[in-house]
Structure formats: C-alpha cells, structure tokens
Amino acid sequence: MNNNTPIWKHSGEKSQDIIKYSGCGLDDIYLASGYEKVVTPYGSGISVKNLENLHKQIGLHLTKYRKALSGKEIRFLRHQMDLTQSELARFFGCNVQQVARYEKDSNKLTGPADRLLRLLFEEHIRETGSVRELLESIDSMDDVSGDQIVFEDVNGEWRHAC
Picture (cartoon, rainbow, N blue to C red):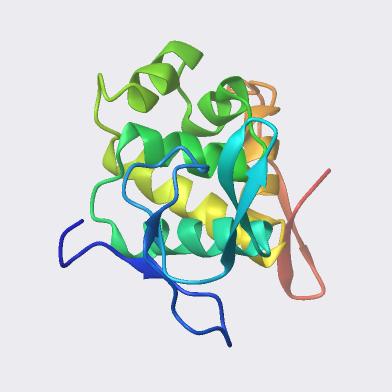
C-alpha cells in the first residue's frame, strides 16, 4: 500500500485495522471500517456492510480519478453495469476479442472507448438512460446510405420528414 492508495471508510464508523479487500477483484482496495471479521466453517473472513454502495463508490473513484484504467478495473466496471463483453464490444464498436484483450491488459483502452466506459458507468450509477439508449439505437440502426433524407419545416422548426 502506498500513499496514493485510497482507503475506504464506512460513514459514521470508527476506523479499524486497515485491511486489503480483494472481494471486488481489484488489487489495491483497502477498508478502514465498514467490515467485521467473521469465522465461517471454511475459515476466517470478513463481512462488508453495504457492499453495493462500496462497489458503487469504488467505480466512481475509478472513473473520476484514474488516468488509465487497468484490465481488472475495466472488468470491474463492466461487471458493475451488468454488461457482457459482447454488449460492451457493441458499445465500443469493436469485437468481443478486443474487449477481452483490454481486460487482460494485452491492449490499452483507446481514448474514445475509455471516455465512453466512464460515461456509461456514470449513467449507470445515476440511473439515467440517455448514453446507453443512444448507443443501443446506433447499434440497431439500419444502413440507409443510399436513401434520401428529407426534412420539413413544421411551424418554424425543422424536423425529419418520416
């Protein structure tokens, strides 16, 4: 753990021993509160309070403060949005193998794909639909390259004539 490693605290709780949290699949997440140590039939472990909100906050931290996302971070964000590699590939306009390469750190996420992933996550957290709906609409468009596109003036406003 270095000085730049974020340490997560549960609101309203005193700090406990700082522990590494690997349940999200990321290597550098530490908790200072919001957990309790438990003993299970399989050994000792931890129980995290409000896990969904913790994962939301981790995702927001990644999208707002990480300059370059690692493969594990890309996978984490995709899982939080409940997207398959195939769905994310459609949004990126690439094939599923490319998304797999991003997640394995074989290829770096391109600038436009990086920004789009951040926008999609932000939209997912805010539960709005504009970016995702627009991407799904673009993905489902028919190619009408040879057809005329006609607009008409309706009460002083231009509109596409259906």
